[in-house]
Length: 391
Image (tube, rainbow, N blue to C red; front, side, top):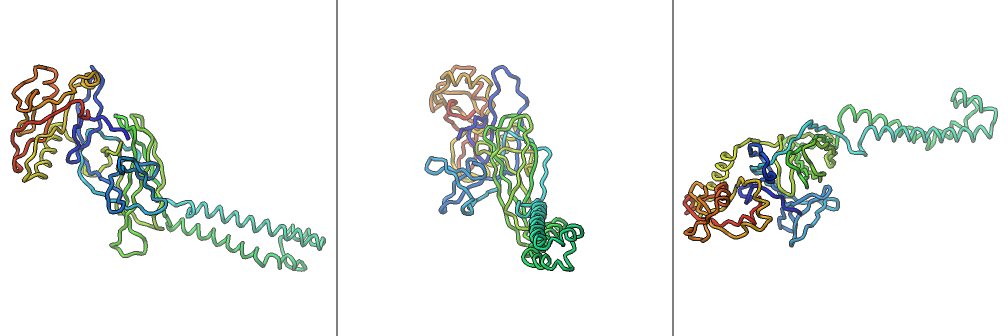
C-alpha cells in the first residue's frame, strides 16, 4: 500500500494527518485540526494481532511477514480486536444525506416472497388448466362448462379429483406464503440494514474504506443481551465532489433492535475524521499541539525520553527542494521544554549553527514532543532528517 504524504511527522498518541503541501506560491486556507472518537482495528490470527491496513471488497487486509494478506469472513468468522480512542487529524471528510433503515435480506424480503407466492400460484393454475384440458379431451361435453364457470362439480368429477391432490396442496402453500409475507411486512421481520449517504473530501482520499460498527439487541433474548456486527466496505476514490455510497448489511437476526451505530472512515489505513464522528471537536494548530503534549506527558509520567518531532507546517516549496536532493542530511535541533525549535545545527552538541535562513525557517515550524527527565519536560536535542519525514 502507498504511504500517504502528510504534514504530520510522526503518528504519536493517535495523532493523524493526511495533508499534502500546497503547490508553490499557492495561498492556503487557515489550518484546522479535528479531535474525534476513532477506532483501531486489528485481526486476531492465532493469538497474534495484526492491525488492519486496508479493505479488499468486504475482506480485511493485514500485513504478515511484510506481505499484504487478505482475511475473509466468508469461510469462517474473523476475530477482531477494536480499541476505541481519541484521534487528532488535519483532514476531515463530509457525510451528507445520511440514511440508515432496517431492511431485508433477499431471501427474507416480503416482496420476494410475494413474487414467489404468485409464481407458485401461477404454476398451480397452469397445472389445473392442463388437467382440465386433459379431462375435457376425454369428455368433450364438459369443455364449455369448465371454461365458463370454473365450477368443477356435477359430472366433472375427474377434474375435481385431479385438483384435490398435490396441486391443491401447492396452492394452499402459495396462499400461506402470501399471507406470511404480508404479516411480516406489517410487523417488521427485518434482518438487514440499508445505508445510504454522500461522501466528499476537500483533500482527495485515494484508497478509502468505511467500517460500520453496530450494537444490537436480538429479539426474544434477555433485555441486557447485546451483540455486535462489524461491516467493512472498500470505496472508490473520493474527492471534493460528493460521491453516493449505498450498501446493505446482512447478518442480523430477524427483528433486531439497534442500540448503537458508528461509521468510521479510513484512507491508506489511517482514520479520517467525519462530521458524524463521536466526540468531534475542532482545534487550531496551537490547541492541537497542546493537546498532543498533554497526552504525551500523561502517558510518560516517569519516563526519560529524547525530543521527537510531531507536527509541522512546512512551506509549499519544501517538497520541490527535497526532490532536488536538498536537505537530505541529518541535522540537529535545540528543543525547549515547551517543544519549540531553536534553529538548525550541524553537530549533535549544537555548537555549529547552519547558516541557511530557509532551513532555519522550516525547522522553526516543527513542533516537538519535548525531552523528558523522569516525566518532567526539559530542554533537549533532536535529530531531524527532512527527507525522511512524512510531509
